[in-house]
Length: 625
Image 1 (cartoon, rainbow, N blue to C red):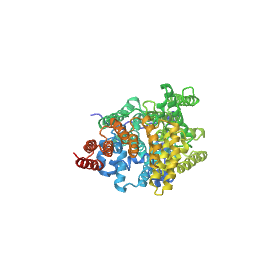
Image 2: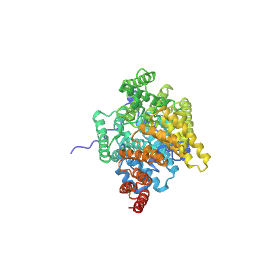
Image 3: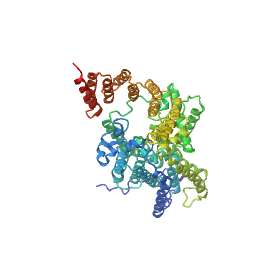
Image 4: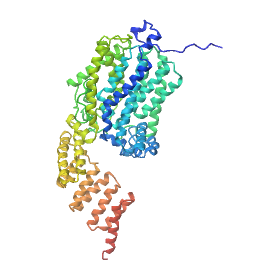
């Protein structure tokens, strides 16, 4: 019988500077806070999080919030909708499209909140802040495990920089971005459990939990798939684990990724966009060639770094043409290329040294890859939410650079931190003030869209969103003067959007609808006709244009328009009803009966079609033979 080994492989940090010092276990542990200090820090992080994001709890629904709340039928069913949430794609409960993404855990949390607190937006916002505060707690705990060779002020500084950074307001103050918060949170918890097992000799249950949390993270948002590379990279940088051990760590994570892809493939009808990418969604589609498209992508990646350093002009919208298409001859693309080239070169040079700054660079680049538009074109030109997970790499690099520049001995039990407190205090104060000031942008659509219209002046979507807000406000007004005031406010915003993108079919349609509501039917007809020219498949424009001719009693023209729409969407019950009504007014009762019956075949509950059918049958019966 072979004797059992006394100890399995234990944690050994790969910090070259300290490797030869062989510090005692007592010295290593003393660099971390004791239990009392740890609890005080964790409580402080929670309080700090609620202080800078507390005013976001008062916000209502804004932007895309309704697609996972008010307008998502599965979420509205509460607990009863959870099976369907897991059975279909992320947006199926909103738009009946079973494609693009699969994020059931995110929707489940919102459904549970809806079951308990109904459609109270403040509770959804509260839980966004709650999960963000938990992220702060586990981020600090994880970083103290990871950076055990450094005084705990370093993990604390990294955590505070991450929590306070204003670029995160789009995620925390926006209910829709719950997916970003949860996916990153579960990744951090997965890393925490993994470190506990592999580096601190905790039971194998921690390892199993790490796999579970990583799977939950992917089920919240698939962009964290790259963590199957991040976690092994962490062990490479901060331990002396050999290649075989790193492979052993990464294999289960890769298997989880494969499992998710398989589930996604089985659940979704299509795992990517079914339709061609529109320029309004991604400005890169307006590039004339692949070289310009790549140059613009690199330019955008440079803007991400700029936002991390200078988070001043923040906006929810970067769509066409807020970011212009550039070529490789433009200074913007060349500067961005040089910056990334320099960062990658530094990271590679310092790779063997296992420099934490190099780790931060690699972390940032790897986690940004799936949302960078480099691999595949995503449904957005740029978004501050895409920086959420990746910004941790920035915070790690900046924290270690500050320590290095200020020449602070972080391996010291009692380092002189006065200068660091001052510098970090100034940064955190500036971050916090900006964050608190920006949270009210998500109070409602008016606040969100007006802030975007001020910042994203070259964005067609930002102007159109502001215009829709004015139109919606007008429709809610009972006073005719107030109603017309908001209708008139909307018109310049629609034209501002169309000046940027003349073929913006959605803006053309909404402009027409605005004119229609003002009973300016000639202007409405012109807008609807331009909408149809820009997008021949825009059936709503056909419908409303047909209604205008119907109201003018030009029934043949109206019928022609309605029938054209039927070629695009055959068996549309609304179009069939309208054609039947037009034929009735032309006293062509047999045609009215025919189309009314077709409408009822498609939609048996159509009251208009049933009424038209009865009237036509009675009229036909009363005709002299």
